[in-house]
Image 1 (cartoon, helix red, strand yellow):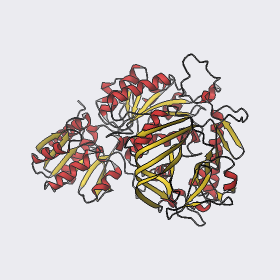
Image 2: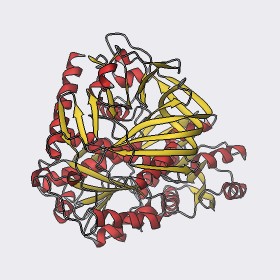
Image 3: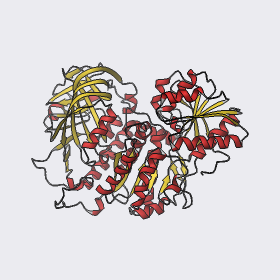
Image 4: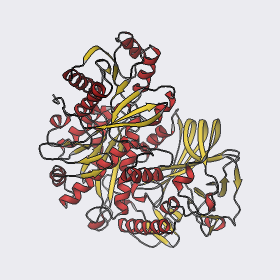
Length: 631
């Protein structure tokens, strides 16, 4: 534990140094809006649960915020100048001024934006909605969301005893509460990526009911009619350390038309900007949200280690809304608002990449897709598109060889989504390799994305076979599996990486004998130390999430770009592109990767997992013996 505490303090000092390097430092003035914080999230994650700052002292620095109490004894909500302790019974208690906190962040809340919202959103959709209102990704915001919530899921930790466990260990046994139609306030912040480790990057909300009786850390929600108030923060204080987070250091704030530019920080502190496109809402969110979180984790770790080229790295992320038109527009927006963007990354679907990558290429930027697996992509966007994942022909060949050789399947029936390039290619490559091996495709039926009736009609025309190959996206994969079982198909169901939709399978916990190909196994029983290190870091950064292969792909893709920048000793787009093409033996969470000017797709093995009553189990790791031609 001493080692963990020292490591946390070292990380905290490094983060503070980095933050100070990124921003100018005039003296504190009364017109600055400060975020005051005691200790760091890194220290809390390491198990530093005792602090000396009293609640009475904390209230002198703000009337709005969140945190926890010594010994991790509940969640803290600070609202309207009052401090509440949400204990593990789910009840809210007024905190005594003599109580102490090991970690808290507060501000004096004076909103500069206020509006109402009459939409039914879940929490991820609410955050995407707020992102549209808060274009300054490099500025912190305090946010209060008030009203009635149709559904709410919150947590509170149990009080811990010394020797203290890590935060991830402590939260593995948290108390969770669910309620419906509850009125109250979500109190929290949206913080930029460069503050990861100091605090939680992205959104972080605690809830307290309108009668101030219940609350907790928000895990999930469904909104009703809400009032939203937002306060922009431009200064950071941490127990004797202060700095300005001024607009001239926030690279993604456009100056008003005709306005004079503010003085910029020294060139050495200007961030290296990477653009990220992910579908955080819509049908692709199941894949892209964890991938985006993996990318943000990689950025945070890089900045904790000093950035690249002696400069911090900034990830400018936009939500494509699972809409190709929106993705093209968002790519253009990043290029317009951030003309110094060095490269792009992201996305997990071929059609989505084909909306964004050509726009990047037309402007001289490479696009590294973290999860889109079409081996045709590099030819469709020549010289500018790289994959951090294997191609569909590779995973389909691995699936076919496993089915024929390991499952002794002589016949196969295919069900596929005809409206996605990914699923069309995947089923075609599977059929080609399966027949090459001597197998027979006895039936092939198609449907369109999200059409449950269409899936049912297609299944009604399928022929029984030794194995059923399903090429589907993340939302349709469990639905199609359910309907196959209901229709009397008992053979093993085999799919591609579109099946890797994590917690969604827990809603279909009665299903089994389902297998799929994917990029890595991230289970807690995987003995690989690199996998376990990634799991620990990811769950510490996102306590409410468990990483999957797409989270690891986002992490690897971001680290690949950072390595290319370091290897090129330049953030110029053309230099990064040349350097990425020559990277060899990159040690990623999802495997070892090498590129060459002739091959922008890495040669990687394929992992096969089983879905068994909602949980994943490792089956095999396969390097296919023969792979169909991409075209």
